[in-house]
Image (cartoon, rainbow, N blue to C red; front, top):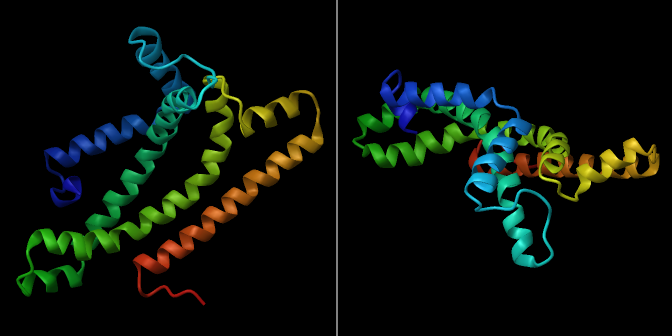
Length: 194
């Protein structure tokens, strides 16, 4: 929001440069750097594995979750910044300014609501990439999961396991696309479910 309201300002350039650098970082590299700095050097999180208790399960999922989110955020930020700038330059925002609406209320009520539509679509599209990226993240952090199971099925030529894992990933992607369409109808009143 700050980058879009101060277009071509210092904050905008910082966001754009950090975002461009973050977009070039692959998941395996981000995961490896998090392991080196937060597990090996700092000793805050385990290096790998899933643990045996519920608390250990949650702690062992922090770095993989952070890895996935850090590789997803740059695309979301780029899309959201662009759509917020478009919304700021639209006629309805100029009309709201002429009515004397406060800048904060105008940004939240009009700009953010209308600008977030493209962010929802980008998030929905990236879920498919997340399903494929789970293979990499699970291997980097030595986690037992669908990705590791699918990879083991490929290596041992266990085709039924590969087919079931592919089907589960496909169902997840379809459900997220459905939820994306529902979120569209909630955010944008012009889109109606029928």
